[in-house]
Length: 148
Image 1 (tube, rainbow, N blue to C red):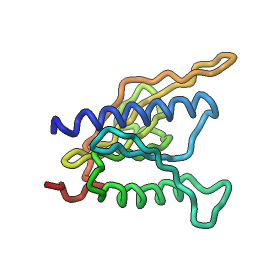
Image 2: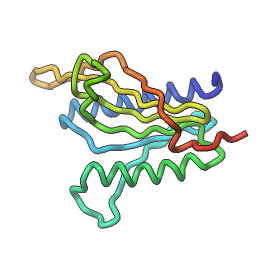
Image 3: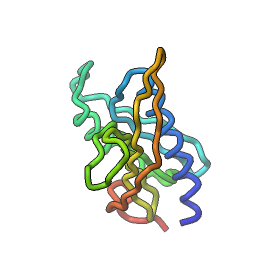
Image 4: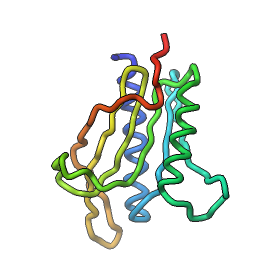
């Protein structure tokens, strides 16, 4: 587990900061993903729809990213992957805000949905205040079988 923690933390920080920047700029974002190699190189992933639609549904983009990240995770040099969406946090998690960045982050032997509650702070240039993340263990979807 110790080997995966640093790449997981680095990837989580990267995608969360990007989501925060997109929220500050546009007030929303389409789902996106990323991966980190064993050597520490981070790569982004976006979902282009099959029909090339300029305004695809967020659900379609999420579905395409899920398939793409599953393929990415099967590579030998991939330490972790993350799939990110702008969501309403489930009430049972009792978050400080309903708005959240949800990061589905996985590495071999590690799978979590991490919800980062946020609020938009008003001003001439709105900023996004992130709150403490809430992690929920989930069944692996990308690293279904752990590599040896």
